[in-house]
Image 1: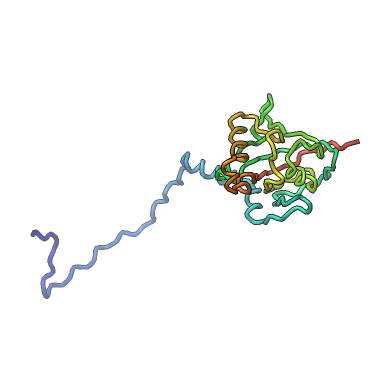
Image 2 (image 1 turned 180 degrees about the horizontal axis):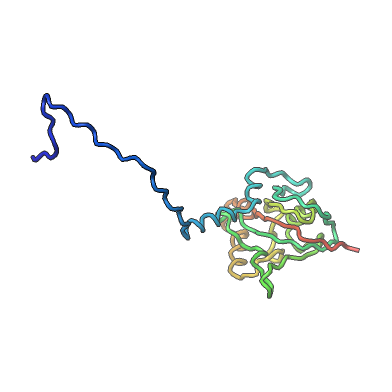
Length: 207
């Protein structure tokens, strides 16, 4: 085996340590942000404040709603709708099952100018699932609310609105909720539960 380096000799005076040069260290140039850093920063800043509100808040059951639970993401300051009023809303709907699969969103329905088209209907008309009406009757214009709607207040048939305009989304939604085999196995409470984020845009009051 070959040993490299110096071997100290007994009685020898050790050499003094080498002198270290003193001086001012050169300042490193500022780091230039890479595209990845910029994308990360953009993604973090784009997290909606509603998500933070959801994490900090808690769901409460809406009185007289048949079990609909709501979480206030933003409290509105406008009017409260009543039966006969026409309302315009934006929503983001997903299933409690299927890992929270999103089946529809009005934010994806765009007009010719690229603006999202709200969903418009009349309170009390019976055209939409009861859970959405129950949520809106205690909201104010400008408010944003997340609601968990149990099967009894959700879709009872395939003609109740809101209905996804995309055929495949619509097919998947209804074949999941009304799956006869899984319903027979007692999974109806899981399959039929839907979650909506609802934003009340405007009210046209009934006269």
